[in-house]
Image (cartoon, rainbow, N blue to C red; front, side):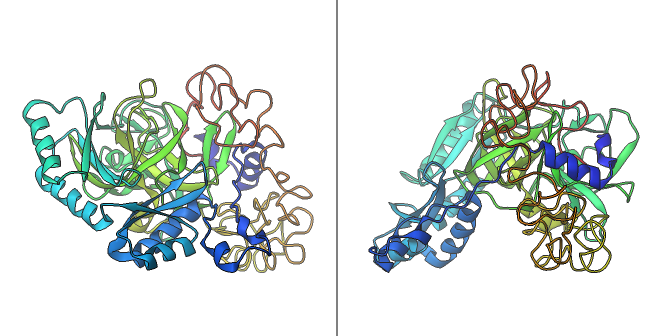
Length: 510
C-alpha cells in the first residue's frame, strides 16, 4: 500500500482521472408537477429518491408512526420507499403518503418483530444461525448453515414455531457462517490477513483506518506485507458482542490517509460520508481476496451466531465474500461508506449471505470521522483564497468550503481538483471569488481549469477506463459500480488477473 504516502495533490489528481463511479441523481419529479394537478395530489404521490434519502426518511417515519409502523424498504427499481403499516388508521396512511412513501398493509409491527427476535436470542443462540428482519415479507428471516442439524435443527425450528404463524421463517444455507479472517493480501497481523475498510481521522486528529473487529482482536499491529514492518496499531476492537469493528491508527502521524476506496488497476472512488443502510439498497464491496462485488441489502439489525460468539447489529446482504475480505469496504455508488465486511457463508462461486458492521455505529463507538475533513495540506492558511484553493480555517468547514457536502472530505477543495460538484463551496472555500482562481476548486464542477474531471470525475463515457474499464484478465466485479456507461469495469471489470486486486492494498487506498 505504498500509495498511502503519496502527496495529497497527486492523490487528488490520480483519483480525479481514475474514478469510475458516477454519482446518482436524486430525482424529485414533483418539483415540476403540472399546474392542473392539485397540491394535495402532488404531496401524496410517491416520490422517487436515492437510497440515502430513503434511509433518512425511514428513520423519521418509524418514530412518527409508533405502533403502526411495520418496517420499510427501498424499492430500487422504482426508486421509492415502501412503508409497512399495521391496521387501517387512515391518519397513518395519510402521514406515509405525505412523506412521499408507499403505504403497504401488513400484519406484524416493528415492535412485535423486535420482540420475536429477542425470543430467538433466548431460545436459539446456536452457532451457525443468524436472523434479521425482512421488511419485504414482514417476517424475521432465520438462516441456519450446514453445521446446524439434528438436535440443534430441532431447537431452532421449535423456537421459530413458538413465535406464531407468519412471524418468522427458516432457510438453510449451504455454507458455514464464519468470520472471513484468513487469506487475502491487504493487511497482515499475527498470521492473519484482512482488508482495510475506510481511512478515518481520530478524535485527536491522527490518521487511522477501520477494519473488522475480529481482525483487531487477532493482532495488535498490522503491516502492508506478511511479516513486514508494522504500519498501524489497534486502538480499539469489538468482537464478538455488539459489533465487529476495530480502529487502527497509523504509526506514522504524517501518513496521508486518503478518503478513497482502491478498486484496483488505478481506479478509486472518493468516500465523502458515512451513511446508514436501507433494505433494498444497491451496494458494492471491495475486498483484498475477491475484489469488487455488488449486491443488495436484505436485512438490518442482524444477529449472527459465529463459532467465536454472537454478534448483533449487523447489515445482511446477498453480496458474496471470501476469507481475506474481512474488514473490507461496503459502499454506495454515490460514495457513502456503509459497512465493514464481518463474515458469512458461501463464496463468490456459489454465493451466500454476507454480514457487515455498520460504519456509522463503528465511527460513533470509536469517536472517529470519515476522511480528514479537509485538513492536512489541502488549502490555504487563512481564508480559502491563497495557494490552490480550500483553506484550513474557512475553506474546509462544514458550511463554507469543501467538507462533508461541499467538496469531498479528503480533498477539501484543495490541490488542483476541487470537489465533485462545487469545488469546495460558493463563498469561502475554493469558489470563484475567494479560493478558486486558476487551479483551486473550479467554477461549477470542480473540474474547470486544471481541476480534476469535467462533470463525470473519472471519464466521459467509460467511467475512467478506456476499452475494458482498466481491467484485464478475469478479475473484478460482477458489477460496474461506477460510471455512466461502463462504470470503470466493463467486461471483466476492475481487476488485473486476480479478482480486482492490486497486489498490496485492495481495501482502501491510504
